[in-house]
Image (cartoon, rainbow, N blue to C red):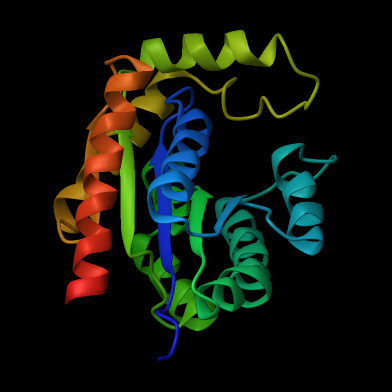
Length: 220
């Protein structure tokens, strides 16, 4: 019997939503319950080439990005990520858990920076040809709390990735609206998780939704 194709699950949300923590918890859960190989990855990044593009974008490296030029860079990194890591892993039956994907570009570049959403979709069609996650978790957390958490985290690392955290609250409020609208427009794919609960509460909700996806994938 041919091995079942893997599953691609993404995590989205504003700064400080707790995506990284929930990815690790879900990874442990999947490996324990289903004995499946899990790949934890992130965007922009995930492969050596895409990580180099990440450094250019996130840390700026002296480049004054326009919304369009930045979007093109995100999709360049994404194309490399999908073709070199995500699709090959899916073909071998692995579960991919990814911290951010195309929904973040839609939200940050369109809702945040004002780029025409159709431009983003056109670039998306060219680079990914309709490739989307099987399931997307959007962790919904109020902006003030999220930024407070994010800034606290930044005090404890030396990544230099503070570009978005330093933008004003109004920018982050637009992102918050954007993620919720994406979820509303894509109910089959997206699940909104209330980020105000405890880490354990969030994890249980996410596990439950993944279990449903697993059952559909193997019984449908």
